[in-house]
Length: 391
Length: 66
Image (cartoon, rainbow over all chains, first blue to last red; front, side, top):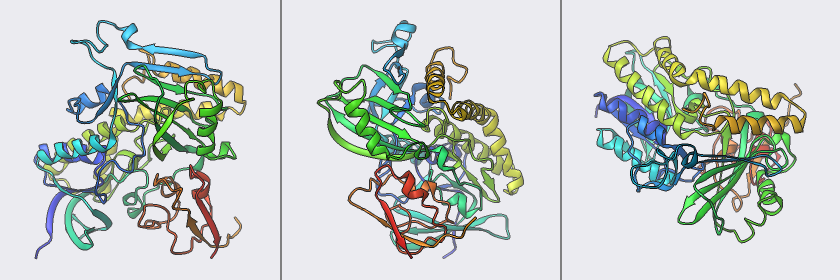
């Protein structure tokens, strides 16, 4: 049997992989999207916050299928509990609100349903999707294509692709196959834990609690999760504390200025993850290969947010690759640098700038000064006048 | 840099939340992973940087000398 031949094989069907796949297929490419999991989105390693703008920008209509709860703004706290409220229902009441004709600022989504929804959209655009299929390796061949070795329900399969897209997350193996420098520093990967809880009130705001006392190197959060549930979590940088994230989360729940609010909380789910507060990968391409999403470290270095950046990156990658392959250029590393350049121009340069802001804050060794800087930066970041609003 | 003794990791599966942070921080070459998407536990790690133990949000990774 001859090997199946695709324009793109994409490993990983998270937001970045499925969005890359959808836009590439819409432009006529033959795309295979594989994921090793049996159920997308799980295990959940993410809080699920995403702006409405981020969805609409990539042609996704907010849908009850995947929305837990609409969001209207932010509550940013310093370590002592002083608060800056950025509620767009009050700032721009004619535009934002729950009433007919008004809109939310963003959403907290159910990652299982969200990721499946995005994959469905890709599938409907003509993408072939294989679940329970893991990538094993790839090898550029003499004809300018590459062979991709997969294992699907225990069966080893070789397919041919003109370009392999690594969308396999922070734990990316695809980037390592290509010898890209994917290694992240321990000082830039936040160790995160969150509980989905009952009996904690929220009011349509993403609440972010800064301060070394509660989350050294990162921040804590309280997000609305729909149906009266909330999400309480935090991320810490492990070189800045002797304790683990679990210890810090327990302390935050029992001892912080929110202890009365959390008093009756009941844990419904436990989730965790590593969140990069880091710069994007310096090189996100190789011969016959590019990386997108977390695999390329397309994550906001200030907020740790990665859904918007994954969707935008997927949009850029899908469109670029379609135009690129349709133009007949050979997919050498040199030529594929164009993808990274397009991404830098649209998004990446702003992320590098944000990384500079973040690095400056944590270069300060005076805890009080650093706490004040982080609080100001977070409050400024989410304000309506922020230059980074669209990241 | 001093040469470190290889180690074999053990994961307390009861506490593991499958967050993937250990794999994300791991500087090993591709494939140093378990079927449960953690760092590998069936072969020695000759780097022995122990960053996976540091990053684990629930401190459920330990090691012994290989």
